[in-house]
Image 1 (spheres, rainbow, N blue to C red):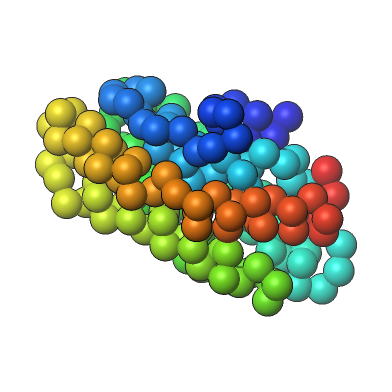
Image 2: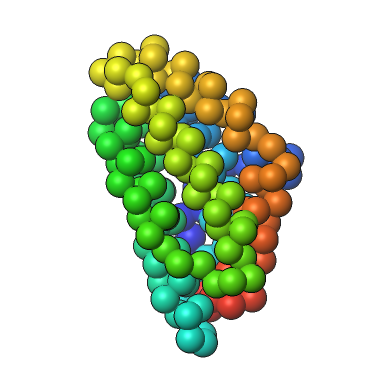
Length: 157
């Protein structure tokens, strides 16, 4: 089962977050719903091999991060690590712009969490709610769809 199969998606659109644990899952689903909706395992062909392997690992880590929803400090630390992971992945040229949109949105989540006292659950909830409003849009949805299509066509399940 792919990591995405556990992430919610609402009526074809990326969901809006609600605090606290549910808000964590929603934050992750906003970022990964389209791209994670596909099983990842291995890829075929050149640079696609590295991308598929790295993307598989990164998305598996996103799923694991969702389990940290009851510990906002650990969640924020994990998001910071994930940001570095996503930013270090070199996407294929045909989805480079979509990947940039996806990683920029993940960076926005990290920035929102780093800007608050993560020992304060209410502050974390407010940061997640603010992020949700900015991340739930056509640009991210389109980028996720393009990444998902690439993964379906180029990465074996």
